[in-house]
Image (tube, rainbow, N blue to C red; front, side, top):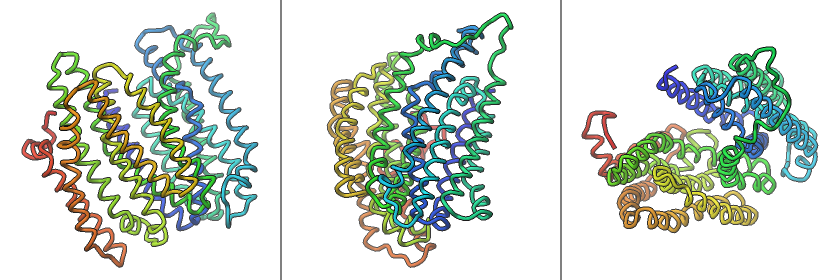
Length: 500
């Protein structure tokens, strides 16, 4: 299967899953209630924290599967590694799932701030979550085999089917049996079983056949050679989980469940800003690495700065528009003024924080090209050490808005101080121009436009709110485009023919 087809299929399934997942969220709140949706947000957060137990094993099996297909190991050695990793996966799934099951009552009675839902129903929901999360996590092993075998078209189609069953199809079940958290989570458990079974059967088809005389055995020894790679991946993944999920964990035990639902809704919308910047990083990282290898340092820096401007135009204008007009955006999306007023302040802060984060990520791309991630590692440690205590304090004292201020403040300080330091070490003299021209030179005109527009905008209906947000979005990206020398060049060239 060609790389092009794999990439297209992968993007299509991701966009489909993310799209229907986001579009259907207002229906959860409408039919289940905000407090029940808070449980859905808690379920999503648990899945993210369960990823800490992965220890880098999923990308490891994907990498080793690819190496097997490349002829770097025998079928027997691969099967021995797969069995060893399977043993670890199943063991962790059982231990993690059982621990969560046993903690269901303390979570329901003491951690979650339940006000109107039946506590017994919440206990049942958490127990179902425990099994569902363990099963979904176990599927990561089989996904690794399929990914490493480059069967991404099949996997993309399968993911789309599972997303359809998980999101829209749950309403069919709830219309039949009631719009309760218990029915919702029983449905999610059924989908998790179908998902892990489908992945298991496909991975079994892809595993190499060995002769009867070859014995796989039961040993952890095959894992040792790949342990260093796995732990490196595990550290990076763990830092990301800690940075992005600590606020959700803390607030799940502080906020009333209904308010927690509004919080998770706001954070989910803000996360779309990072999705907008992802394609640029995918393109420029290999390009910059190649230019560095060819000794074309000036060209590499030009690519770096041009890409910064493009992200500032797209992700920057989006984050600022969302931040300035969070309330009409929520009202246009959900049709519920209560949701809009509760979630808008949180969305504003997280949107701004993610807008800063989108450009703060650029020094990592530079380090990747140079082949030295030392400063990235140190920066991650600094973020963990500063952000987590700050978020714990801010969330405990000021709830979701406090967490939002912490997220924005730490990311802003990281951009101004640490990114400046990294630039000074790796590319002296670039930081001031990069920050003033490639970022602020685009952000400031957009801020002025949106600030002036915010004084005049008014709406009474969802349609008026939607129209206002759409018009302002186009206006913001137009001003950002005009403010960017790179974006102006793109417009003057053949569509998609620009060379960074």
